[in-house]
Image 1: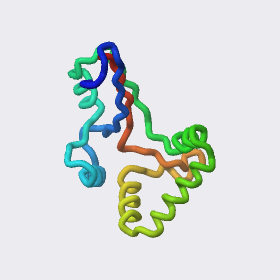
Image 2: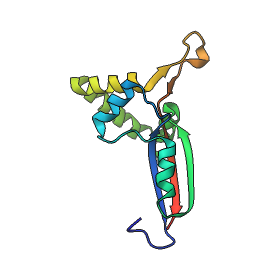
Image 3: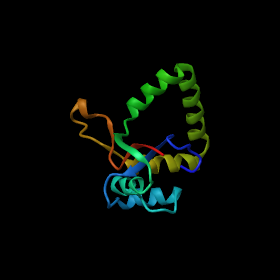
Length: 137
């Protein structure tokens, strides 16, 4: 906000934990990346309310891997996405510590739905969501 002109807009894209009580797996995973506590949507909304901004808006979204991939393809093109995917796979294969980290992240944040129903064979991100916060100075 400090560098925004009066009347200018401020926006944040922030992840948050769905509930106040995270599973031990999720808590240990998050503390690997940040020393801070997990913040819930209510916590983010309280921070946003105290921001001093006017015309505040909050929109919440689910993390959807398929949608994210589709959007990247549309925004950046197939060649860019394939190059990025190739680099990611190479690093995953060549770096055991990265493989361990990625595997623990997936186990902590993704829950598979009922495999007996083909319509439900997608990964559901159960622990996290993200929200867009917009307001005017």
